[in-house]
Image 1 (cartoon, one colour):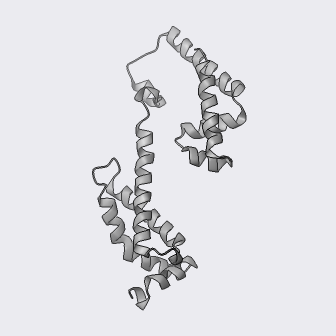
Image 2 (image 1 turned 180 degrees about the horizontal axis):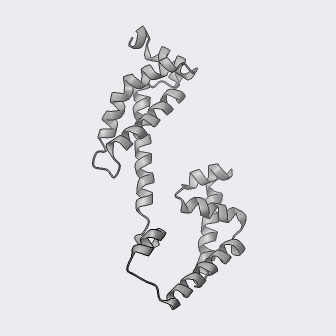
Image 3 (image 1 turned 60 degrees about the horizontal axis):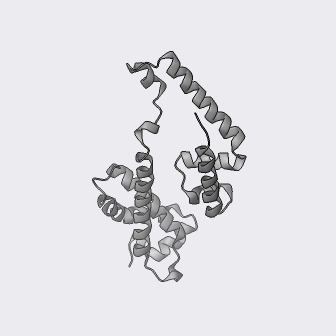
Length: 189
């Protein structure tokens, strides 16, 4: 099927994978409608349509860069899967952030200052002591590896992402998190 400047998708893909920007742009223009169609399936999700389309475009670029015609799939099939996976991954990441209990979220300083709730001197002292106890525990009770795993876990990284970043396997990450949980159970505030 000829399209962009008389070239087939396969020709455009080969050129785009070699760094030809015109071919890359041709593929992006051609498949933008596909990205929009897939993103529109998720209207009503927590993300805006523009964000969904942006995530889909990231999936399209990944498909263009990694497509291998020798695997037997047509590019449109492969691209559709990559686009859909990219959108779903973004929704999962958003959901993980959304699932943090509100009680665990610390308000910004200005929100605290604007609120009418004021801590008593005793409550403020106890809160500082608890933070101090937790901080001491994190530095003294956890290894540097466990501290790094905990830090990445707190910011929402998956076990796979943590494992990749730290050069370990996912089982090592899971074991570290289990050790951290056991150690934290022993901390009294």
